[in-house]
Length: 233
Image (cartoon, rainbow, N blue to C red; front, side, top):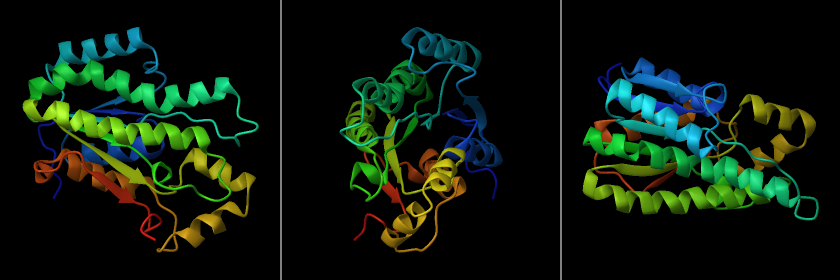
C-alpha cells in the first residue's frame, strides 16, 4: 500500500539528511505532497525567515496537514567544558527551531481541519547514556517532549494532533562521525539496547508515517520510543 498519506500536504524540516530525509522519502512514497525544508532554504532559528517561509507555503498551498519538525542542531560536551554559547546554540537548535516553525505553521494546520505535528524527542530526554557528553542535548529534547504535550492540549479544539517520536541511536551522517571518533561508543549503545542493532532513518520514518496518517486519528500527546528497548529497562 502506497497511499496512506494521499492528498496530504506535509512540511518536513531537516529534509536533506538523516531522519528528516527518511521521513520525506517515505511520505512521498505514501502519497503526500512533501515540502522539504533545510538550511539552504531557511534558517529556522530566525523568526523573520521562518515566518516568511510559512507565509509562502500558505500562499501556495492554503493549508498544512502534517508538520514534521526533524531539523535540529546540537553541540556535545561535558558540563565542565560546555560553553554558555554552545549551550544556548543547542537549545536554539533543538527547542527554538521547533517552536518557531510550529507557531508559523499553526494557522495553516488549523486550516487543514485535521493537522498533525510530529516532533522528535530522544531517548536522551528520558535517560543519560554513559559515555555521551549530551547535557545540552538532553535539556533540549526534554523541552521538546514537554512542549509537545502542551501543543496537544492547545491543538485539540482545532483537531490538531501533536506527538513526539523518541529515537534511540540512529545511523546518520552526523552519528557516523561520532562513531568513527570513538570506536568504543557503539558497544556502549548496543549494551543498553535490547535489540543488538543500531537504528536507521527508515525505522523512525515509518512511525512518522503512521502518526501523520488517519490511522492515528485518536493519538495525541503521545511519545513513542523507537530505541531497540533502550529505555524499557
